[in-house]
Image (cartoon, rainbow, N blue to C red; front, side, top):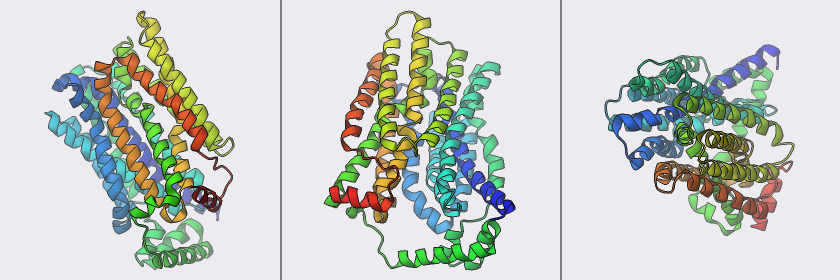
Length: 454
């Protein structure tokens, strides 16, 4: 591959990966708006929980349907549609005059989130040379946390320099329109996935895309490989949902489900969605709460990068276990911080607890769960199995986010974070007992050992 084609391929992949940035940015803007919206519409704890979780509910539904839609209409088409959803969601949310309109905007954004979660990694994996595939797909996760950090910075500057407090939340949500518009036009120059073109018998177009990105000789080889793969898939029936319940798969299914639940019951979705509320409850002022949220986003980015560097060197299991220990310890510190009567010391302890928690999560359960999912399930049912455990993970996320305002009001902040910490520490025993190390083993080796053992 020539240097020009290498740069062209990387540029195309990075443009698609930027959809993760858009998703992280749009999905995190609401963190700063929560308090303002609660006051604006006079929300009770359950209405506030619904306002936050409505996006996650829609994204769960979208995860179900985005795969088939991407297969029918194209990966690029679905990414463009998701970008339009983000733009429409931002505009509608900023102009909302009532709670119902705001929820519609949140649901619309959630459908965009689900589409990006499924389609962007799919496109990147299909267009990347095999030698780069792991790193290129990982960029999508990195851009998600970079988008979240940018959203936290945006919220901070709006609060810090905004003039009319009543309009702060409208600016926070409406600013999501700014990156969505240029990104839509950037997608116009991105070619369709050559695998999708081949699936739909558009072979000349598929060859043109491959030749542009990899050269004529390599394009012929890769197109031939794609056609062989499609021909092989055509001879096999699609896996049915009932196949996941096969007793031989019970072990890997239990591992997948428990890891998916553990990732969410340790409280990550609550911390990221209600960060400003948490810091204000700990005694930080308005501006300080938004600045501390920026620190959370920065730590999330740094330790996500650390995870990408360590996960193939240290292994999945050690990172998951050490991360759970850190999650539990820092959650207990935050719980203690809320019991301290001195506001300055309480705020500092809670900040340290939250930063340590996010750091521990970002290099362990955050990326580690998805890596584990991609490795433990047999080749034939991998896509279906990941979708099923992913939906369970997303559903638990919805429940945790929805209940958080009620828990804070009824149980108190200290007990809420104590519960999260206990779940994380209990998770260490589960990881030690059931989760295998998958580093350095082929997918076929893992299938043979895990399915036979199950």
